[in-house]
Length: 213
Image (cartoon, rainbow, N blue to C red; front, top):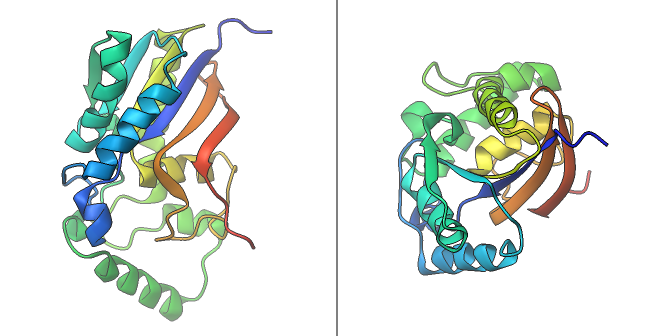
């Protein structure tokens, strides 16, 4: 067994006000709801027995606040970075979700169904980050963490959209299994992976459900 593999827990933040109102968040922020705070506290309890050597978080407040609940018990400082942010939805950030999904569906209807590879690189608008772009920056950040903490256990608090991009990139799920707009990655969900700084090995997923295809 390679004892230099880094174990990384990738966590989605707690529920936010805009999650409830179905507003696209992306790189714009909204506060955790009362339920979101409860989810973060529950997650801290669930992960209580795990000895983390470092905690990383997206620099967006909803992720940082979730990370704080876990960091307090672990007595660790939170390292924030833009690289762990949610996928950027550009002109759709801060707008009701239906604007994005209506435009996306119209595009698919007009151009026909895209292949998995084409869809992964598809940009609805020049300001919108493609799944490929989001997954790429996220993976670079995870690889840097794995290289910096060989043999250690690290917590990463991030966002549902970027976790979805990551899982699709790894081939763990297909677009049909986690459709656009479907909430199959719950608030407080996490992915446990191991990495040697190059490859990623999924060991466990909690709070992630695949759609029936």
